[in-house]
Amino acid sequence: MTQIKFERNEDGVAALMQSPEMMAACEHYAKSAVARLGDGYEVTTYTGVHRVNASIITTTQEAFQEQLDSNTMLKALK
Image (cartoon, rainbow, N blue to C red; front, side, top):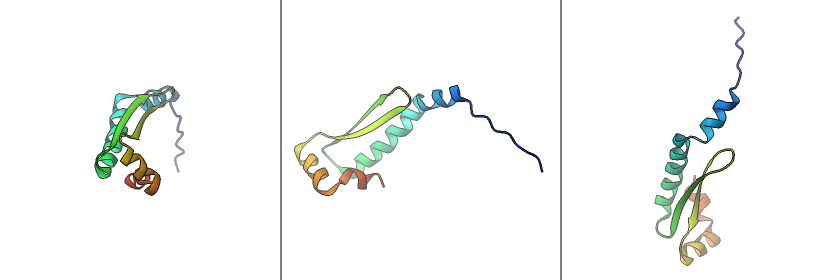
């Protein structure tokens, strides 16, 4: 049986985690959750030190209260 040796390219992984393609994938996932949530939620994205990030935030008091009462953001991500 042939042994296969795998070496991870650290620079390649770092570049992938901060790439525009990864940002688009994260943003797509967050926007699909916001579509299930309805009005009062918004997606924000940014590039951090090690990776890209997408966040969902509330923009209205009603959405904020709904999130507190029912944990709707977590449920929308499933």
